[in-house]
Image (cartoon, rainbow over all chains, first blue to last red; front, side, top):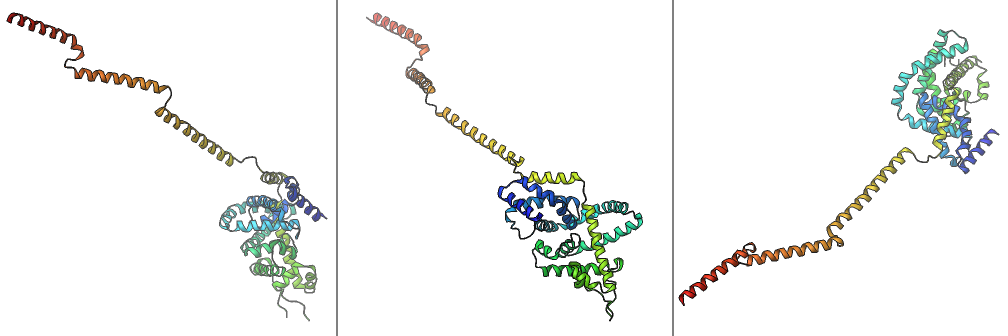
Length: 200
Length: 167
């Protein structure tokens, strides 16, 4: 129902070329698109800029939206393409992350600790483990990282991931399989993943 | 039959992709534990990302405004305005240049009022040249003409005196 409403809004915006109609879509989806982009580029300012770019591009290409996927999937698809373009300059992103991440992570860790009522030491350890997971995810090849984040962080079903990435569902499964394998291999000891014994 | 086994990546991917697979691994205690660890990992990532993406209201309002600003076509961006000003300056310079050149050419070949003055000056010059030519052709310069007349009269008088004496 909501999707139908969104599609109608987008269709009306396409037909009448009214940015005001498009405002509604921006308000409905901007937080999710920002979150997806933040997961992919790991830089708040860059994610903000790319979110703006995403909606501007969506507005420019609104006539090409045919309703084959939901509006949110379509927007995620645009966002991922923008992040890929940006990913070509990952060296700059590396230096930005190198200087920006510690302060942000400490702040976020303290905030999480306060929220959960856990001891700061325990929360900090959890954050360190999480930081390691992010490092591994950042090191994944682009497609695997996209699939992994959309599945884990956004909990998108494989079919929607396939639509967003313009892949076959089988290809998405293969990327997820490889990503899981890499994360499992590198996180085995500290995170306890893959510690089960072999079938006897 | 021991149901304990190590999940392979395909099984984990399958399990993460649907509830049916989740129910399937539930028979194996270790598989379920590992699967739970993966779910925890996913939950942690999601929670971490959500906490980082949780921005104050003004952030979203500002973002909306910026997007809106980029969607509405601007009347004239500063770059276009600068280009228009440059074009106007060039046009004006071209017009001024065009306006000055004909005036200078007109001054050189001006046929109206200056023609009379020039003709007058030329006739004056011609008269002066004629006077000079005449005075050059004369044996005695014009300023000495009275003296020459006097000399001629004196000469003729003395000549007449000689003739009288001879007669």
